[in-house]
Each structure stands twice: as structure tokens, then as C-alpha cells.
Amino acid sequence: MRVYIVSTLIGIFGINDRKKVVYFKSFGNDPKKSAEKFKLSQIDFVDEEKQSKIQLGKKGYREFIFGYRKPNEKNIENNNIGEKFVKDNLIKLAMEKGFAKTPNEVTQFITKVTIQLTKVHIKKSVTRDGLIIQVNGALEDLDKSINVYIERLREWYGLHFPEINRKISGHEKFIQIVSKYGKRENIKENDLQELINNSMGADLKDEDIEIMRVFATKIQEMINLRESLSKYSEKVLKEVAPNLLNIIGTTLATKIIAKSGGLKKMSRMPSSTIQLIGAEKALFRYLHGKGKSPRHGIIFSHPLIQNSKDENRGKMARLIASKISIASKIDYFSKEFKGNALKDEINRKAKIILSKK
Amino acid sequence: MKEIFPDVFIENNKIFTKNLTPGEKVYGEDLIIRDDIEYRNWNYTRSKLAAGLKNGLKEFPLKKGMKVLYLGVASGTSASHFSDIINKEGLLYGVDIAERVLRELIIHAEKRENIVPILADSRLPENYSSLVLEKVDLVFEDVASSDQIEIFIRNCDYYLKQNGYAIIAIKSQSIDVTKDPEIIYKESLKELKKHLTIIDKVKLDPYEKHHLLVVLQKK
Image (cartoon, rainbow over all chains, first blue to last red; front, side):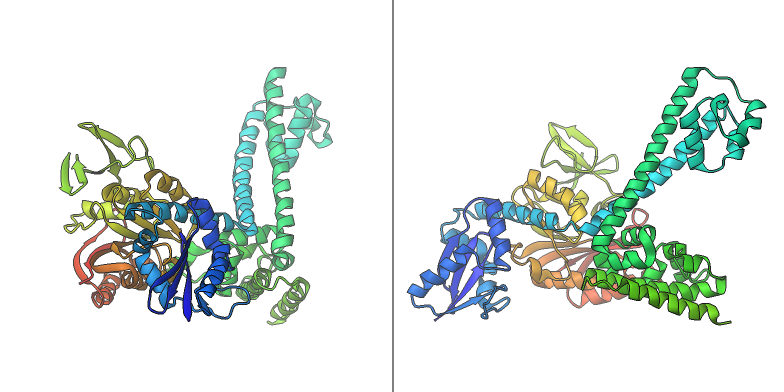
């Protein structure tokens, strides 16, 4: 005799060929436990299913058919008649089998179970490459902030020593000088001595200079933080996308994974999409009929593209995008390391492009 | 406060629903009290169905006690007003593919107790058949996807009761960004007519560019 074992959010049902309920075992009345058991039943046997086989076996049932994949079980039939019958009549059957007294009680309980189930799904949806997306955001935020604060400090310190802004154009050097020396008279850089002696900047009090030093120190900390984030990103990339890291480096790999929305999405993109990530404005302008089609998006920052002559950039962009596409697929699916082979391929083909007239 | 449809109110050109959880805001909307009843402002620049009402929608099938399937529920800005209208006796199954926004909905679902958040791809309605307990009275779709018409029809076939209602917000730019919206609307309506009866339609401009809201019935 045949019986369909159907797993639902409230428990396990046994339905025979004539659509009669011959078995029901509830998962209990803790929504969280019910959600866990239901989720488990999608890939493995739960206790209640094992018990059902024993109990029904005693009643003479020999053929057990399940709706979801189970280990070492051959009798799987998706969406079988037992499943359909239970799904169409769940509220009624729940009341018949004494699980609840009114339809409202059933619905309320199942709502709670579904919420728990969705919470589990959401928990499981956080993947390691999702962290890279956040790090990329943090880096972009930091870069904006650091720039704004440095501009502010230049204006501020410029009241005391305006000549430094023209002479020291590098931001990191400027921050170092201010936080290390403070007052312009204390600066021990040889090439600044003449400017210091003839400066038109004001002579400020110690406390005025001191607070600027504190500000400069904080900016330096942010610059160091940026460095830490970049190192962390490289570490995670080595685990999560080593092939991609190998062929395009930390900065570009972080950016492109973030802009694609993750490795899973990236692995499914055609390389032509990858080629243009970041050039959406130009792309849609072209699709609407104005302007030329863009040839590269953020991958432009790759040295092979950036340093090529204009006429070769399109070919380089296409080449690199196609290898990025392959790398992301290997990183997402097989997880082997073929980074060096891919890199060699890029270099070999790039040489051919550059050698043609 | 004037009632324009059952449980939908208007005052000073703003649309309101009665707050199912008084004192609670969902998305920073205004709360006002009239005759000891708290109402929530239904923002028509953020919710497509409210934009439809503002633009003169005549058929409004959403009612108290209904079971609703909402495809593209996101963080629940619109769904919260659906929840107000269908009240305790109703139930809203909210499907969305993005965990980040569904996470927000869960908080409101736990408070209101008539929302069921489902993390799933609405392209495969079979995948959530264990979580939707019955055929629904209304299917609402607001997903930005090129196959949104097919998704809508598939879900109506699977989950909508006979004589049930269906509402879709057609986003022409999602279907084809290069075509004229009017052509997209025409082609979409032609496809929809094969499966459902059109009973009202209204454009959502200027609140949503290039969107058409269509109300249908499964006859």
C-alpha cells in the first residue's frame, strides 16, 4: 500500500492514494522549532518522518513517497497528489487533526512559523563577499571624508602658514608636517625654511596651533584606517575570490565585486556587462540614441587599459573583462586557483594587441 | 475626513488609512487623530497604489478581511497601508527577492500580525506554495523586472481565486528602456487581456515616471 509523506509548517501528514489522512504528527507549538524542522525536512529526514514510516509500516504500508529530496531515498516525487491535497486543505486538515480549534488559530500560528523561517533564510543569505561590498562602501565614505577634512585643515592652517599649501601639494606629507611640528617656526624641512622666514601668516597662540595638530592627528588616523580596511579587503579576497584578486588587484577587485552586487551575480553576468560596470550613464545615453557607446567602466583603472593608446583601449577592455568574467566564475563555482594562468593569458594577448599597427 | 473607498480616507488632498498599530510609524509618515481614531498618511509619492488613487483610480478592490499576495513587497511602505485596510481578519503574503529590505518588513510583520514575509523569487510561485495557505482574493505586483507581466500572470494562475482581483504597476523602463512607454503599455495590456479582464487603468505620472497601474479581475 502506498502513502505520501507530506511535510508542512505544522507537522508531518501521511496521505493515502484515496486522499485520506492516515497519519499526522505535529511539530509542536513553538514556531521557531517548527520552522527549523520544516527547513530540515527539505533536505533530510526529520524525526517525525522516521516515526511515520515505523507507525505506518505497522499498519501495512510499504511504499513511502516523499515530496522533497532525502539522502539515500529514491521515492521522491515533487508536487505529488498527497502534497497538492494537503496544501489545498491545510487549514481544514489542521483543525480536523486537533492541531487548532479555529481557522484563525491555524493562520496565526503558521504566520509566526513563516516569520521564523524567513528569519533563518535572511541569516543564511549573508555571504562573505557581502562584507567586501560593505568595505568598499566604507572606503568610499572614508575617501570623501578625508578629502573634505584635509581641505578644511589647509584653509585653517593657512591662516598661520599659507605658503605651505602651494609648496606641499601632497596631502599625506602636509598632514605629517602639521601633526609633527605644529608651529611653522618648528618645522625642520629644509626646503620650507625660506618660506617660513618670510611668511605672511599670522602668529597664533599655542592653543590655536595645538587644536589644529589634534585635528591633523585624527585625519592621519583616518588615513591609517583606510589602509587597514584595504588590507582586510585583500585578506578576504584571498579567501573568497583569489583568481579575481590575482588578475586585477585589491582595489579594482573590491570595487567591481561591490558594484556587481556580489560574486554570485557577477558570475552570471556576460563579460560585456562587466566591461561597462560603472559606465551606466554613458551606456543608457547611448541606448537612448545620443553619443557613442562606452568601451569601459571602472575597469578603466587597470594599467593595461589606462596606459594604452586610445585606439587600443576598446580591445584591452574587452580582453580584461572576459578574463574577469572567467575568474569570477572559477571563484564562485569550482574554487580552483588558475590566477597565474589567467594572468599569463592576459599578458600574452595584450602583447598581440599592442604589436598590431 | 472623508471616506472615498471603504477604509480609505481623504483630507486636504492627502490620503489616509486607519492605523492598525496606533502610535507606530512605519516609514516616518504623518499620524493624525480625528474623533479619537489615529490615521496614517498614505504618501502618494512613495506608494504606487496611493498614486493611482490620487490620479483618479475608480476601481479599488482592496477591502477588509481580504487575503492578499503582494509581489515585490520590499520594506513594507505600501504593504503597511494594505495591512491597515485588510485589518486583523485579513492576511498579506509579502514576497520579495531581496533580503536587505525584507529584513525591515519582518519588524512590522511581528507587530501587525497580518503580514507574512516570504524571501523568494516570484518567478517561481511553486517555491512558496507551502507558505501561502490558500488562494487569495487579490494579487498585487510592483516588481521592476523585464518579465514582470509573465510573473504576474503566473502568480495569478497559481494563487488567485476565481473572480478575484489583481493589480499591477507596469514599469515600462524595466520592460524595455528603449521603447516608447505607450507601446509597452499597449503590448502589456494585450498580453494581460488573454488571461484577465481589465476593469480600470491609470497612469502614475508625475508621481512615478512611465508607470501604468492596471486593475483586473479573473473572470
